[in-house]
Image (tube, rainbow, N blue to C red; front, side, top):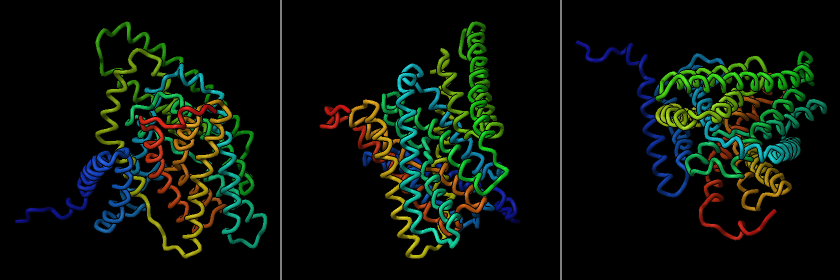
Length: 418
């Protein structure tokens, strides 16, 4: 008699992997908390450690296995990871103080513009010395594209770090969230412009019109949802599950419409959906319910997934040097570029550095942009490895720097105004 059905064993491997992810992220998260670092750092490190181990044991790869994170993939962990970041950004929207955020609208715009221009110029100039192409025009385009990749900002990790520290509604945090949304739009425009030179089917004017239409759509749907919740509050005197279901459906539909119909990142649609519901008196109720969903399952998969989906190719000494230099440029350009924007807008020196640190992480956004460039011939496949290194390092160090800068012990930086 066979005690174990070997066919079923292979079919249900994902259960063991899921358990390993949850335990590893929690254990390493607790360890990093003991050394006074954000738990999200532990989750990221857990993914980096688990990825090669699990891929070696089960033979899963980023292209064919459960760790595929490509948009539209039918792979389990890719889908759960995508839902995880959507729920995370929806929760960030719920926790945002909309009145405080209005105060930093102008500042967020200035910070985002400088935070895009500086990495674009510095990244493009750095890539020029490492891009190997005899066609001068194509070399220029490929170099600029590397700069475009560095303009990306993955604010989800920053959001989780700020939530963990209880700093999500500080002036600097609101500026970061606002700048990240605008940064996303500017990144889409920059990506569209550079790819239009290699793809004549892309119409820049049409893309800009779609972005404007998205925000019109978001406002109209948002107004409808706001009044729907006001009506439901009158008809329901106690907490009801219908509020959670409707809110989640609204979040997913908003994310879907943003990505598919308007070409805007799905996390932007999710964040705006959260902002709308943050203005209702069910805000705290929804926050608590979605925090449980995110903490128990989705967030660990998303953060560990950044490490799980990494497969670094063998790199030459030149590529390693490029990776090191590009990482330094990626950190410096965002940190000081966005800090400069904060300085111009009158934030204190400490707040300027907090804003700069919050915009460092590139995360999955940079990888998606890089894949787009690879598919349209604007980035050589050999350069993907160095970009992955940039993503990993910026993603890990951003929470660490934020923790240091948001430390309760106040130093001289607090006394210096911009």
